[in-house]
Image (cartoon, rainbow, N blue to C red; front, side, top):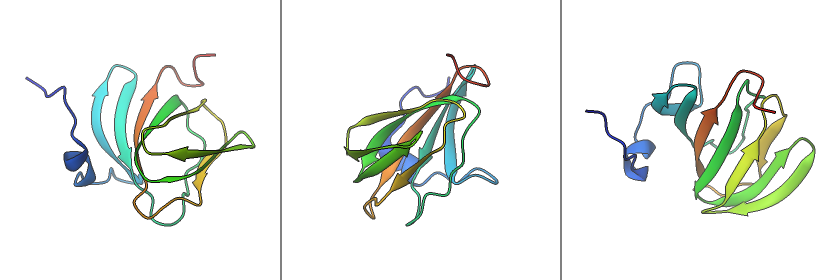
Length: 108
């Protein structure tokens, strides 16, 4: 039986997916759970699915669709499919849970 609990400690030691800067932890239908901890610079590009980030540790600024907002540990952030987004000025301990979901192109 698969595990339905995903610990932060296990996520931090999970190997990165090939050609990705994040570790794949779980998939179910259209949803995937990943762990992402960029090193100094966030180089991600827009994604095909909607995504939610939950900040596991650290703080910084989230830029999405030209808007910038500060975030801290425990905050949840949303990036619609296709939106240009990135993390800026984040602390050395910054890491997020990433939840991709829904159809290609987003739900709305």
